[in-house]
Length: 287
Image (cartoon, rainbow, N blue to C red; front, side, top):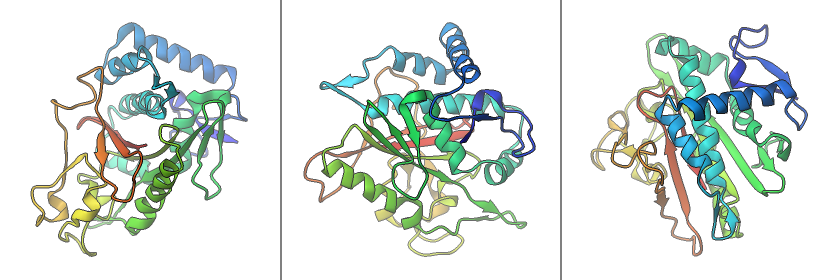
């Protein structure tokens, strides 16, 4: 099985910027060495806000109430991916990143980027089931969705995937898992390149189809990291809730948003958004 390793991006015959390594359940020695060297550089110099938060994550207890919590592992993994992509595309304009996002990157790449820090504990399976990543011993199950949209010659974004296909199907699976007592061991992760202007360009958030429909508030509730000026606004008015007051980068402890699910009698669905306006990639972790 082949995977894309973010620490060794270079030109190849298969993908423009990817370096592909053999991966059969256990990362090879060179890959592991690169991971530890990279983490060592991060912890030693702490040169970015993303990495400073990662070091805080590594220094905190990954256990809550006697149980290992999946979000703590995913936060550190995702922040490392964001930082690596920031460095990778530091001198690339949005059009170049956009082409890469559509032509040279896909969901399998994102799955492997999230999975590889688990090393020999993980099993990757992309067979249509809601278990892209299984982590043995920790009993974690992670579903991953990569969001993107194509751009027409007229400069308009096109996202033909329906809301149910892009989000609700996997979100409903997460609710089912929580109801069965798997809170803290199951997660749904969505990721996307921050080159689309509005989140509505990669997720259908309107009441109907069209270039700029009125926003569907019932859909917005699933994305607490979005800001809508009013219930009557249109999708192009939706922006990210980038805030220094509740940013993941400004505090050692981050309080996730809670999504209200009426029929979820026990447990709850939490959402953690990872991304700054300057970041090349964003994540939302649902658990």
